[in-house]
Image (cartoon, rainbow, N blue to C red; front, side, top):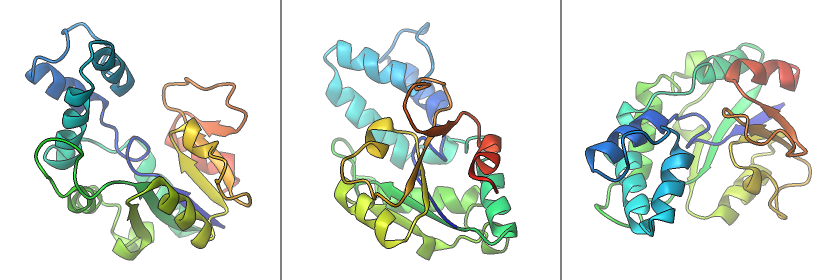
Length: 200
């Protein structure tokens, strides 16, 4: 079996960090829910899409090192390595932010993966050649197919439902906030549920 896994908001949990930085910048009221979706929706309703876009670039670039992995994500890769299940990380990620300071987002993401232990090959089976940050959504879809992924795990229903999603790949939703119970595809809420769901 070959398993592909998304990066942002699937392995990396940004919620507390985004909330902290949004408060630092005075972008949101203190009582707003700390989830990324709540902050995004609040700023969009305020007509501050540019602030949201710039905030994401800053978080994904300069501050990513402060974001933790979702609990159990690293253990999943270690489990796959133990039973000889090949894994890839495949993400749609631009090289630089759309707005604001031009951080190298790919370099920042690789640094995060190293510091979080995901690229310790003896433990996880992963090194840099198993990680793909694709510049377009279409390239991400193609990479999933060309890598031969039997399964792909992502946090976005809309991506897994894309009309060009590879037909031979099982779609699995990571749904940590239980927002899509009727998505019509396999899903899990916590990373410790992933291996049993996949029969590993």
